Image 1 (cartoon, rainbow, N blue to C red):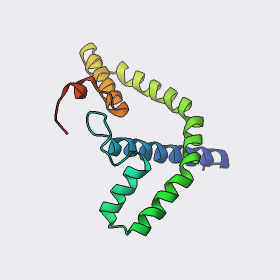
Image 2 (tube, rainbow, N blue to C red):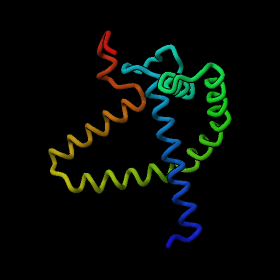
Image 3 (cartoon, rainbow, N blue to C red):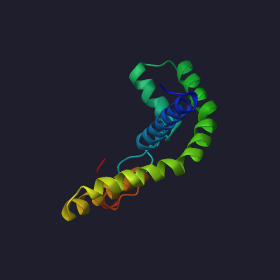
Length: 135
């Protein structure tokens, strides 16, 4: 059975996961494959636009959803700033353990996959920068 502190930690972890996923999704939606803005904005605006398209939101609903994102943004940022070091530490341990299960060739390929994912996350992939005219 979970005690209060473990339950609180799990809830916090779930909140961080959701916040990180939402932030990552917003960044991805707000940039094209070359890391330049699509002109519709990133972050909350991209999420509002996506929800607007998928849910056929009225202009008033879009404004309300945008206000909700704006109102909770400082909380999400504060939580992420607090949890980021712990998350990075766990991520490093998981990656090291996975790498330890791989052959030398697989380790090289695994590191390349991780590097590519990091470049995409940042929006600064050297490969994507070299590609002209592709979306």
